[in-house]
Image (cartoon, rainbow, N blue to C red; front, side, top):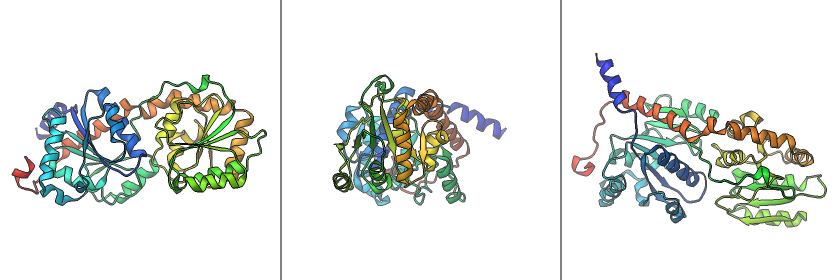
Length: 375
């Protein structure tokens, strides 16, 4: 009889009506993009949501109709729960959610999990794996991984813990109506991303120096970061005419029929850029790291090359520029299958299943702070 009652309880909780994201970040990268996609997913699903946020360009997130609540930096530390700001923040979240506590909390910043656990003890709390560091995820109910390799790593690391590790991927929603496969233009090879070591802009630059295609294609490095000056000097020293247009919120919007995107990273969780490129049928050549292989289905939806081997990358680019037919066909196949693999609806269904499992098996949480603080 107890099992029957539990199942009935689960059936009564088949929906999530309120959710909140929490992110304390320094730059505009994967977390910043994730916030937009999660908010769009919940809006489409009728889930009232808000985002507690500290980082750059909060105004742009608000302009995208995301309910942004300014986050105190101190909420990284559990002692924040004893401060007057704790109660103030809780009231702001409740006002954003029409007085209802969030049923689901998504922590993009691991060190906020403890505070949110205390603030909303009945919520199901999930931590996303923006990196392969799982040290501070033990307090989360769900750990959302982005690719199969990361899933295995997280499962091994957290196997003795009570949380569930879920291969979730991304809730991707197309953000552009541009159709690159019907716009013409000169051949152009593009790097898009932060100019930081894990994105390997230096691998891209060395590959461009080794290209044999003549006349040489146009080359662009879209983005910004600490390595930009180094890349500009390398281009000048090699006599390459490289365009550095800076950071763009929607970098693929002006891609045309003869544009190729190169993703040269040595590490990714799961590249939002690759999913956006597939949604627009942009031909892609990417490093053969686990995340990129997952996104491109082992090379079915784009070409791949060994990590940090610019000479192989150069050969791949030369081959593509000689005849883009095959790479374009792969890109169109990626677009046709993208919704089933990484669409927002499929993603949210997976997460809802995991939320229901947590709700069904969870024991009553013990309040670690006085009720006067939690209320």
